Image 1: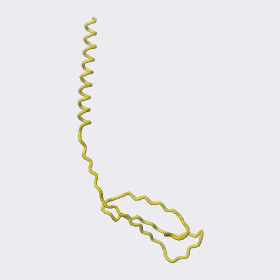
Image 2 (image 1 turned 90 degrees about the horizontal axis):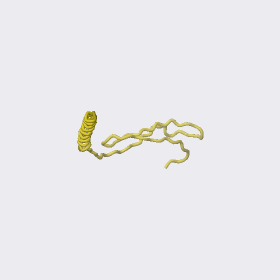
Image 3 (image 1 turned 45 degrees about the vertical axis):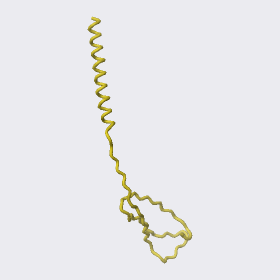
Image 4 (image 1 turned 180 degrees about the vertical axis):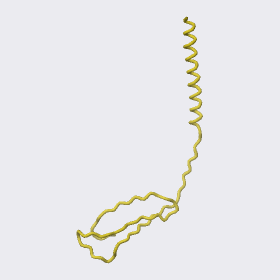
Length: 92
């Protein structure tokens, strides 16, 4: 009776060890595959295009309709982010 239990337990332990060793070998093969990453640099030039009516008189509290566009004139594509802010006075 004890021999039967010993054989079953030893067979289960050996099969678990075999499965674990095969799994670790496959995992090591998967991890060690080389990867090729290509980084290329290009030219990114931005141009701000403002469209509005020139020569109008602006008083405090009045609104001016102005359309601002950002255009990429470089060789590569880019993400554009702009922030519009109201200000009074002379612009530099």
